[in-house]
Image 1 (tube, rainbow, N blue to C red):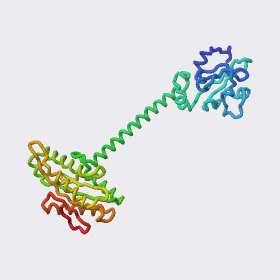
Image 2: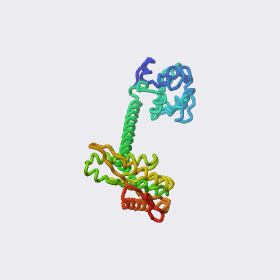
Image 3: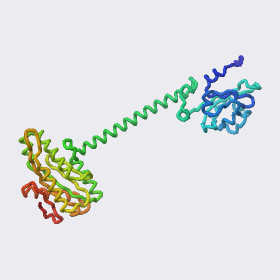
Image 4: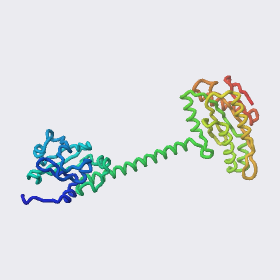
Length: 333
């Protein structure tokens, strides 16, 4: 079906094809769409088309006559100034000698990258251009990816929080038995040097039974503070039972220094604790063992020695400490 040539005003052509190039018979640009001009970075008017574009496929096309030979075919081009890949099609158009061309272009699959690079928006493309759908899908995918990343971060944080809680005593905030076991496993694998203090609170059960659990909780927190003060920031204090605690002092610590630490700890725990209804008084028995007295990494042996030393302190009348020597002979305070 034939008819009269269709005439479009430049503004209508720009709206219909914002990435077009209108070429005269010699291949020079007579008009260009606003989006193409933005991407080109120069005013295309009057320039030879192959000063702006390189045709990658079909191969071997390097002049306007070659471009006429591929009219109607899909073209793969590169915008030279921006090194941007484009797709396009050329059709005959009325030019200066009646043999001009109209070239319509699109970023094609690279539209998302082009949008980001040149800050393009929907208004830079024809309303019917699939680029708009691609942009919508890209934005939707980005939103989904962002939400997925946020959800993953929340789940990871929740997992970390739950794992941290599983290693922590809820009342005192100290490590619990599981947390102590984890630290001991690390020492067993690494063979690090340390001292272990096994601590039992003397007379705590009597205070708890006589004055109530609320007072008992207050007393436990006060004893916890005393143990945390006795340890260094890098050391570990754990509550492993109702009134049973363990302190890991990392590194090599002289025996006399360990004795002074135990003396100071017992004295701190024996200070009267203000509670509802008066003052609570407890004491502590301490058993000490040193990793240097045992095979490297044998944390079970160190733990057993600390427990034996604690038992010796209780047998000695409580409120004292015992350091178990390498021969398992106790050195009492």
